[in-house]
Structure formats: C-alpha cells, structure tokens
Image (cartoon, rainbow over all chains, first blue to last red; front, side, top):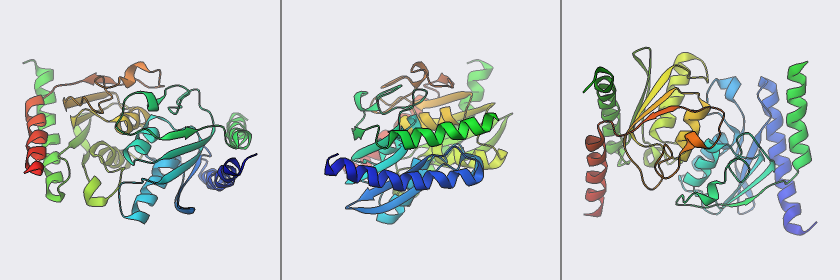
Length: 153
Length: 153
C-alpha cells in the first residue's frame, strides 16, 4: 500500500469512529471528518433520527463545523472523508463548499452521487471535486450491513 | 389564471418576502417557505455570507425549521416554495425530506437541478417530488438581476 492510501485509510478510521457515535441514537452509522493541512477541522455523524431532521447527515454536520472552524463557507484545500458514498444533498453541499477531494468508504447503489447511481462530477456544476472511493470499504460496509441486520431481528 | 396557480403565486409572494431579508447581510436574495395543509411551517432565506456556511441556503434553513415544527425528518404532504430553482444540495435535501411538491420562481441555468441543468426527478432516487417552475418568475429573477447589477457597480 502506498503512503497516500495509508494516510487516507488512517483518516477514514477517524470517520469510522464518528460513525459509531450515530449508533447511540439508533441512527444509520455514517461518519465524516474534514481535513485541512493535516488537521481535522470538522467532524460529523448521522443525526437524522436523533434530531428528526432531514438535513442531519454526517457530511452536512461536518461541513457546518468546518465552515465555523475556518470562518468561511469556502472549504478550498480540504479533503472530506465519509464512510458511505455521498447522497445528492451531501454531494451538492461538497460542491457548494468547494471541497477539493472526497474520499469515501462503501459504495451506495441506491443514492450514491460520487459515481455509483449518479456522477455529480460529470453534470457541469461550477466545481468538480476529486473523488476516491472504496477506502476501508469492508469496514465501512460491514458496519452498515450489521446495523440493518440487527434492525430486522 | 386558475385557482391553483393563484394560490401558488400568493405563497411565492411570501417566499419573495423571505428573499428580501437576505439583502440585509448582502446575501444573494433567495427565499423559501414550506406549506402543509395551508399553513406555513418553515421559512428560510439565504444566509451563506451572513453565517459563512456553505449549508446556509434558503431551502436548507426552511427545511430545518419545518422538520422542527412537525417533529419529524419526513415532510410528506408539504409543498416547498423557493424563488430560485434549487441547486443540487437543496434538491437533494428536498428528496431526503420526502417533500411532495416543489414550486420555484426563476430558472437557474448554472445550477438548477429541478429540470434546467439537471433533472433530479429522472435519476432514480427513492423519492420523486412534483415540480412546477416559473411561478412569479419575473419578480423572482428581477430581484436577482438587480442584486448582481448593484454588485458590479
């Protein structure tokens, strides 16, 4: 494994830690961190059920925190790590925030907009982030499948 | 003009009133209201510059308020009125919130995802809102063009 992939994998482990927090409120375990110049400037996890809000995805929570940290709606120079491929709302938020790079874990065939169901990098929006999928994929997807399996019991 | 269009037009006037509030912080004037059973349950306007957050679009602010009002992330049975065609983030939030109907004023060739640059109703997401564009279009688009013209002076 090259150095860059190892770094991505280490940051993804922090996003996985965030995802675990969602379990406390029985929210789908999805976590996100945002990194700038090697520092984590935003963290978030899914709070849709806890807060009963459609806006409460991990990426949105992390982007809000990162914007507050840098005092700007522009998150240029940042990399966002998220355990599940972003949905349309979150991929749109990533574009609006001008985030440079998106690294995600598990692929989402139902709503993934970073290349799976749709590819928001090819629509013609005014910002196109770099996308890297499948980092710590098994850890990220296992966490989700275990959650949904437990729900069905 | 039929009764339904007149109703839409009256509700859009409330969204226009919201849009004007954005001008106080020199934010692009975009406003939004959410209606359920004839009652306004959420209002929002663009606060991107005021709050320096990429999340601060009119629709997101209104959806957050509406979710709080009904105590649920599901906004089934709701109609969202917004002065400008929703961007990818906001169209994604509308889908995530299961909003029934989106009524917008001005069309957005640069980022509109309710049929202009992209059509999120035809991608295969798990919810497809009804979309009606061009309601009070001239009032909505004039407000925007006047704002950008004043910026250039």
